[in-house]
Length: 239
Image (tube, rainbow, N blue to C red; front, side, top):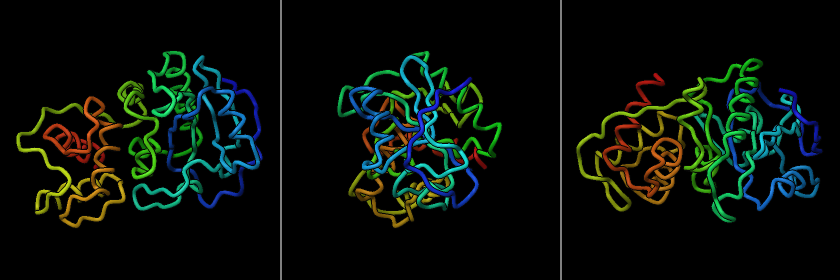
């Protein structure tokens, strides 16, 4: 795979070795518009790569430099992830402009790109995440239509499909030990959710982000039995 060079001026020096890979969608009507924005000095945003719907891969920023893609973010104890992550923008209009499935050519290109990136950097499966995972209160991308399962089956990322656990759903407004345990589980997985025992808006955002990635058939911010079962299974897999 030979990326098309499309340099962006929006980068600076890294603060750490890349150890996280963050996938995004562009969230703009066209790929051309997204590419222009990621290369616009006034926009002050960028990514290392952009993958078009037809499978073309553009390299905007060298992996050895810090691209500006994650913003205020957190994953597994690391904050402001630009300094130690690689960002991949995947062309898709997103929820605002007509969210749609990712074409096969594009998914295959993303999978090949992720594999290629991992030959150069030590990035664990548990650290291949979406923008919504690292910024759940702000971002929805790459969203529930991105084929995380397919990527994991190719050897990149985590995926589980356990049987649903019994029990009543847990949602916003509830309090107690069950909420505390749920929050502790999300914190162990990587989210920024210190356990409080109170299911507030922050917890809803994290549950919704988790569902977009690992329980895409239901994205409602309510921790039903299947959502909790998948969290438990992922914690065991990532241990």
